[in-house]
Length: 458
Image (cartoon, rainbow, N blue to C red; front, side):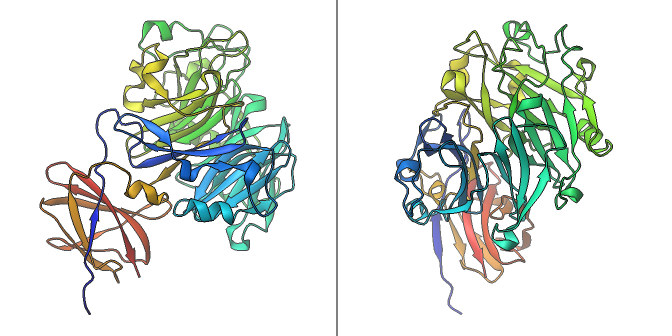
């Protein structure tokens, strides 16, 4: 069989203070009726790519609406958006990551059962979870991918009037959600995700015990001195880092804390929550802070303090490859980004950490960080490549070669969901991947450089 040689010029991961590293940030503009996708515009800046901008007011197929986009999420290359306001729906934009023009043309409605669609997330198999209901009173539903999202399972609200702003899954498949209304985080065990009125476990703030103020993990004197009254103050965004820690962004528009805050819940603390009796709860007591087995709180800088509310944080995403946090901030009409490794060292200077996105009320609910295997444009952005590689044959039946001018140290592969798969090293520069699919390759050289590429295994 004749070999097909495919030379791919790829990007090396940015170093230094690059805000987005081979990632795209999808941001719903709640008040503007638009969804924008931000890409790297230089090593230290990002900008919205107009080709990917969605204007809900101009959608075809009778789906144009004056409603507000709230949360976004992708499964593979498809984009899903929850919409609230004038028309309450879930929209699907098929193959948005590879062909946004066609995705907008072929937009479809997944669901229209509710008066308020909020949190949105997928599990690893593609089942869709969404928060539905009315303002201040939402319920979590599951839509199965096997039924093309036609089957709807009511997981409930744990028997408590709630507002589930954001949803995320841990590595074991347990579901976590922020309950803005009750200043708590809830968890549903993976074994209960097909159960109507599933049992909830919750981790909440007892405001009485927090009157003396909580503990700050900041080392900067100004931020350290800002008072923390509650662990969770109308929490919205939440996401897991590479070490399995759960991060939560507080909206804070109750002015409960003296600064916008992030909470980090340790893996042992998560295990303790999951071990609670069905529908049990646990108080986020101040004594649990500053503990390796408890949780931690950081005050964040803010440029525009207001009388009612401080940071008003919304969606939260984490780039697990580099442990970088992205959060949008309604109060400053923008966002912020922080490296987890140095978050205790941040200063009280908003502009140092400003993320140039447009954030509107109420903090753009749920942003989404798309990887290069979900957004095709990330493979050919306008940056000078530092190396060329040849991957062949491509497509492949399993075995493939990588040729280049540098010695290869490691080859890693990720599927369309970002899950790492095994790469077998056969000999020299010959490798193999067992299962069929499209994979994103990360080639790491002996000199420390990294290059990304794609391969199809047929």
